[in-house]
Image 1 (cartoon, one colour):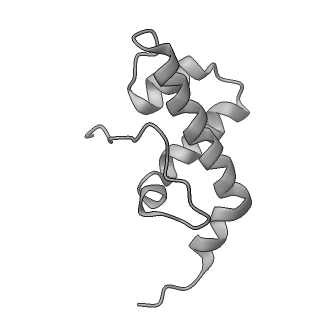
Image 2 (image 1 turned 135 degrees about the horizontal axis):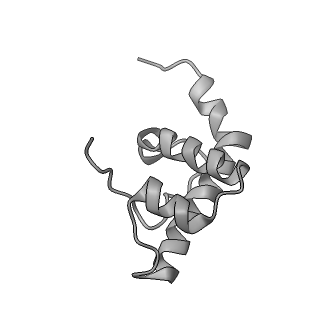
Image 3 (image 1 turned 90 degrees about the horizontal axis):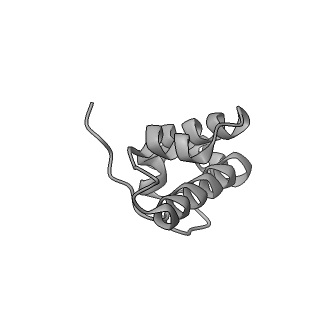
Length: 87
């Protein structure tokens, strides 16, 4: 399975972005890991294939920003997935 590429931070938007659509599974995995109390370093290593020890600050930024977006999806973003497409 190819490794996905990730931005340091997901795009900030009040709507669903193409980036969000590509990373829905990532968001779900992050939410599961957080709910299970997994250490963020383990999650970043498994989900993002990053070694947090190489650049702790960068890894934490990636983790925190994507988890925040995943949480946004559970409160707001999912509504965009439920709307019928115009095509």
